[in-house]
Image 1 (cartoon, rainbow, N blue to C red):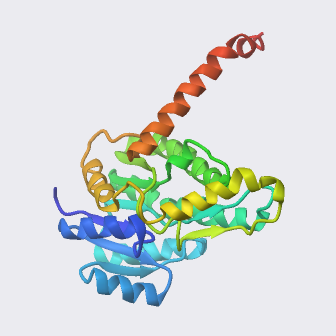
Image 2: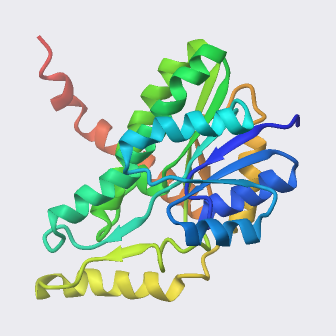
Image 3: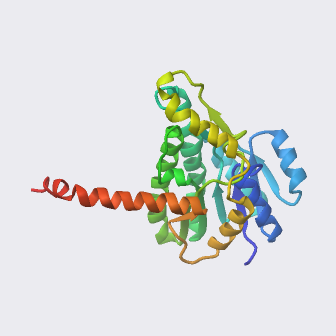
Length: 275
């Protein structure tokens, strides 16, 4: 693969760090964003060959200037990895709406703001690759992560539109839909709403306990995800979404089967509204 320039948000941990590491080792130029000077120093110590930039994806007004400076300093970016995000865990009734707003600011509006900073550049150059990191939680749901799933469903849908709008200009857009991986998602990076309603104990407490117990011991290997990303960006016909992990394959396949059954069961009512 020829040398490419990567712009990776949230490059100091999780998938961002894994992809930055793999791309750097493969000889690519990597610009990794972080939110603090401490994170910048830590990332530089881990990966001295990559370039760093301070970028809070919720500071929407500053993002275009950050992207402009990155390209001025290091040349035209070929691949955007929209990775910055975090998890929120909490029963809907218990979770303050402010926590939902923050979740969407980072996971949806932040990702879209970064993508929009690159869209005119990629369109004008008639090339580019955008990888939006969503989740299997962008295609299935489960109790206790409604805000998170909602944000990933939103980014999944927006990415589909982005893909169709940018395709005429030779720009590829793929979403990554990982299952459970050994990252900080269920640990340090997870915001958890405090429990307050006893009626949900039987449903939710075992889910929260199980997730905490499995944190750090999930099946998915971030280094293998990074290798998959380097493979997919070489494709001339990349998938609209790439499932990663056997759990993602299982749960999403089951959801598709249930959805088809629901469609078939209610088909008569569905078509009864025509005319």
